[in-house]
Length: 123
Image (cartoon, rainbow, N blue to C red):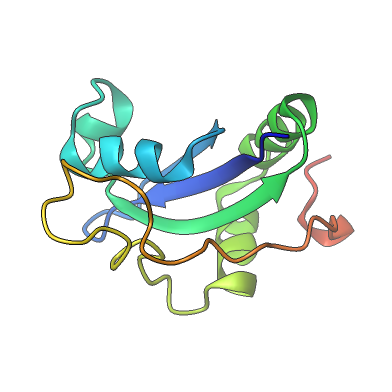
């Protein structure tokens, strides 16, 4: 059974947020950090993973991604800060040596509770 992840990337300079979904979080974060993926995250240098939660299937992960994307910026920040108050890069030590080689995380991604806080929902 595959695990899916909904995640938020940012940059330190401007605080731009990107919400995504993947079934290979380490590979995807490596793509963002190494700027191998063209588009929004590369253009805005979004290389810090500040939030990640797991989902059991693709449909629930996509639904959660859409829910988070629909939140106001302040509610997205509240979601991040509830789990990561200092907005640290959760993947800062995932990759040993060259991040372009082995993209398996050095440590396990902590499971995030999949409970939905009604105060964070967009209406």
